Length: 207
Image (tube, rainbow, N blue to C red; front, side):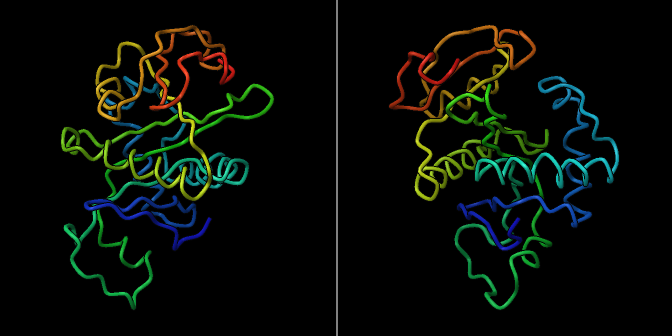
């Protein structure tokens, strides 16, 4: 994945995870093992730096190759409010001075069972929640997906008990399409929301 790729928002950088970057691997271990992440997303097998390296170089990379999008790293800019960057340095050098705070993702699964639209996901360190970062990152990724990749339809799929996720999708003006048991989620009930402008007939998207 391109180490120079990034999306800039007023407060954030959104970039690729790099398997060769130890700090990226260590951050993934930190984020995915917080009690809050485990409660909402479940325990993963990522417990060590090498576990994370394998995840980034395996599933993350394959998702981007297959779909053109996938999991992204969210970091706080060192120069919020549009301050000037030193354009002589590489983006990865800039990123070293930025605090990683979470992830934002567009995930679509594998054919033939993949839905026809990707699912927007996000996770932020507990101490950085309630600051609007999730909404800011989500808006930026959705804009990039539509303007650069032509991806207009996006789903919001999450645990019906996750009120924080519901609040984010509501702030993004997604439409609530109810709850349905999805085999792709182990047969568990899943709250289904759709991006503004999409049909509320979820069967159109393979659900």
